Length: 80
Image 1 (cartoon, rainbow, N blue to C red):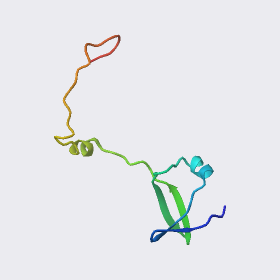
Image 2 (spheres, one colour):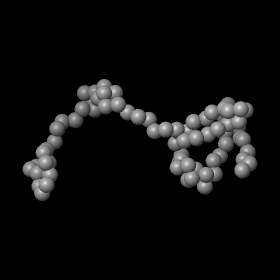
Image 3 (cartoon, rainbow, N blue to C red):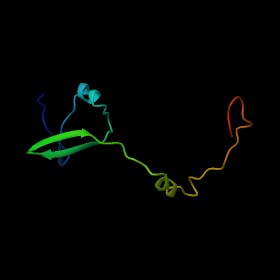
Image 4 (cartoon, helix red, strand yellow):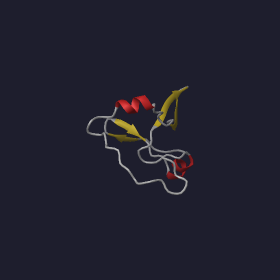
């Protein structure tokens, strides 16, 4: 498929047809990898970012810390 490169600010951009975006499961805001191989551009969906629990815990601040809430006694086969 041939598509046209367009100026976008100080850069150049391309449009990915919706049919292709659907096939590789990307949408507006998706991150992709761009690699130059043998004078060719290769685009592929970026792997989802992996989070580590300790890194997420370090992001907790007094402002984002919430009090514990209770939802009552267990019902059915719920275990608390």
